[in-house]
Amino acid sequence: MELVDPASPRAEEDRVLIIAARNGEAYAFEKLMDRYRKSVYYTLLKMVRNEEDAEDLTQEAFAKAFAGIQQFDAKYSFSTWLFRIASNNCIDFIRKKKLLTYSIDQPFDGEQGKSFISIRDEELNPNEKMLSDQRKQYVHIAVEKLPKRYRQLIDLRFFQELSYEEVAVALDLPLGTVKAQLHRAKDLLNHLLTQMEDKI
Image 1 (tube, rainbow, N blue to C red):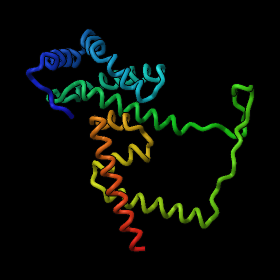
Image 2: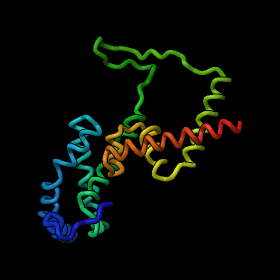
Image 3: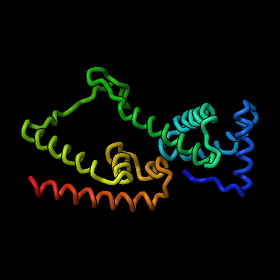
Image 4: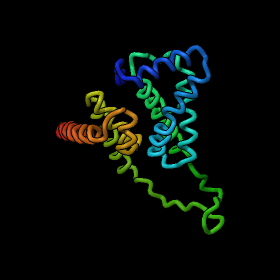
């Protein structure tokens, strides 16, 4: 997390408000929320692309931050801490949303009235499934051999299917850094997979 600049007037104002918030002063919570609410909201809106969800997630982020205000380390930037809470909460929300599924037996309301989901059987034959499972296993083994920062990037981008922008917010990194490091991570992963295949 970003260390706070003690000479910054904004940092000093945040420090005073945090002390007041820890003492249960309601005005301090309100001032902190007024100060950071819009920037948190627009960051989350970029991640979820839905105004109502972004609004709910903004409220949740502040609720979690205020509930944990006693654990906040004042040598760090309050805004960085708050944005980390907001982005982690948002990532959890996105993961849960991706798990939502429709029942294939029940109709749903579509543009043309009641509709059923039609699913084509794309099940692999046993031999193809075995090869696919084997490939997945090799990828996971190779990913585990990557340095920690590359593992984290690969996990967020490809396993959790977050956008580059969402990864940047989640890790509190510039977008260009995320893209450059992901490129290196993929190169290293491909090299490891090639080595593994050569041994088979």
